[in-house]
Image (cartoon, rainbow, N blue to C red; front, side):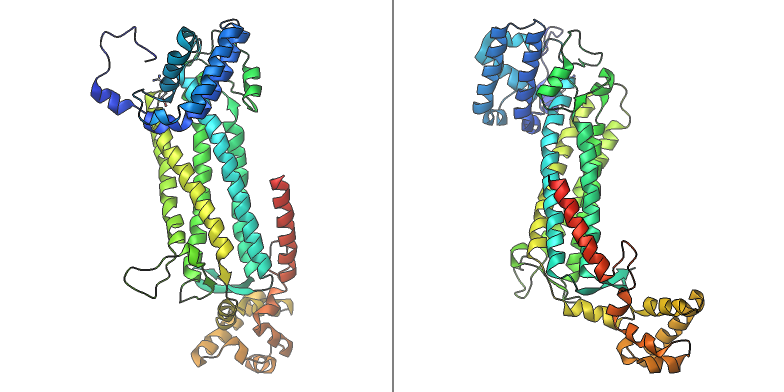
Length: 457
Ligand code: ARG
């Protein structure tokens, strides 16, 4: 136990069970050891440990790291920090009593979680880059495919499949930025803050930061003790990322349904029914959509834990870890799953093209052509609306109209406007940057690929 002198009695069995965190914070085993080794070297530099003691501590910690991770599963210690220190004492003897000189578990827990999360963010970033690359690959497989674009879940305007995929690419690229920013704030070295008031020993905080690969040192010891913003940063980035994954999942559940028939999901990411032999269910996507709720829950949980805490450290903050670990697992698992889905899904080009041709998605193209010919847009809008109304009443599709028939419907339509009844034609005008003109999308794909290459360096 790391504290004892002040007490006449030990903790009750109920309190011990209630407060123990080793069963989850043992994930911090390796980084806790890494931090303690660096701290031992810092103590040696200020003369608290001799060179020999420092070596003994560091070597013993290294052997603990190799041999004792599994022991944490059943050990009786309060948390991972107490577990490692007990083993150190058992193996290295009295010198272990010096390792906490000037160091509090409050800063140690901040250090450990930062070290651990930094590695997890790197995994998250790698998964995001992989997913973005796979979206581009899918777009490259169908550079010219046309699909119906939707608003209000009603057919709106034709777009290319590549343009649709690039929309998700942009969402994930913003996620990448958010995680990168979060990493910068995670990657600040807190040791040397003490419990809350700063270290009473002249430990070289910058040397510690350099040794442990941190970008800089934290600036205020009370802030270190009280702060979990760096976790909220990760969890909010994770939550936004899960909304993107969940929306992609929702789209593809719909698009792969018999009603749409646009996508064929790979057998490897779908499952059958125990009763209905014909079923091929999109469970992988449903689980991604479902897991988003858990990640938002982690963010809400930590926000709620933190919002009323008086300065500085309070034990409530131990409740940060389980939601964090869970959210990291669920986000990384969902990203990994999404990669496989994107890789193994194929587009059946006829049904989405059919949807784009049938549903009067060309109406806006027609109205804009009228506006280009000098008809005020509002009048053009009304005129095309009337054309659609009359067509819907007569069961006529855009393809049923020739240029001459349009001209006969209203002389403001010129016979040349007949080509716009093919959705491929009107799209070509959407050349403003960010639009769905096929040439513009091709350029956007090239640019996106280059951006991803830079991000992957
Ligand atoms: N297990 C604790 C946590 O995760 C470590 C810090 C304990 N500090 C204390 N003053 N009780 O927050």
